Length: 415
Image (cartoon, rainbow, N blue to C red):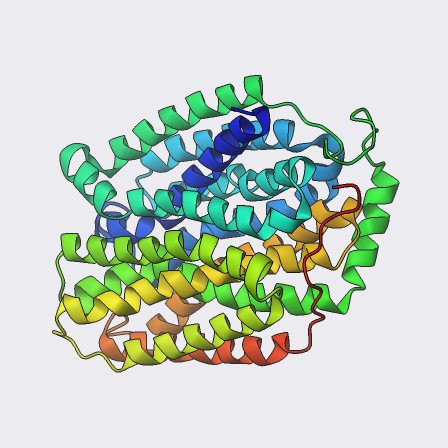
């Protein structure tokens, strides 16, 4: 197997674990409410802590990733994440839980952007969106493990020992990654020296300034904020309480529906990437279509009454995953619109807003539901209000995205 594919597997395995950690609270929410004495607002804050830590870490990553390289960045941060998983597993209060979840977010913060950087250095641009789709699909298996399989594991050994087990696996994978992966400063297929020096900090700040002055960057970032913010808030937390407490489903049925959402993500990742790279040769129109469809799905959820059979919810949850995966096209979209030396900073900059979105929506929706319905903060009316907010935000993002520039993917010179 070519070395670049071995690196691909190791890097995406880290993203797999990141996806597991970020969505795991959905199915263990009842245990967290009981063991940590949480209300709706506290539960939202606990889940948001991961994304706050993740998002804020994107700032130094955007400055250092192109300079330091993904090998060291991913390794050091992953070790912090492993520490966070252990602390979270021993939490007996909201405060300790927040520390653990925040460290988990910091530790997982470079796994996606580091993977993208490794792919940028080793694969041609013409297949980049397709590779991103494959990465998203592999990472989605982490979401799947955080659904029904995690429920079954928690029933056997408890949620605390489950997180300690995953932390041990994470440590083994991190050490293997550090030994096998070595950074390179350029793609082998482009006729430049593999010993090309990394960019200076001055150039990194100049690139960041150019990025912040790019209108397309801001539009894509806002759309990414709304798309992943609403989806991850639902997937990582609120889907569980909604299905269990409002719809009256069992923990296993809830896990199965969240699992089906992840099946949609797995299928959708490579599908949207191939459609963008090979068929339609566009990012913008496909992204707008996906944003509008996601808004419509929240309208469908609002129309569901308690007691609706799970089979009716199955196509909705599958569609959530299938369509939301199209949002990954925002990364190759911004990559297409900036010079190669700014690719890492540009994608990391978008990822800052991508990960800030779940933090804001997780905590914000929890605060709103608690404030509007203090006696029934996890009741049908509270969830309808939350879904309405999500729907409006996605529709607005779709309208805004029409003003971005579209640049068809091309084969790089010399490839």
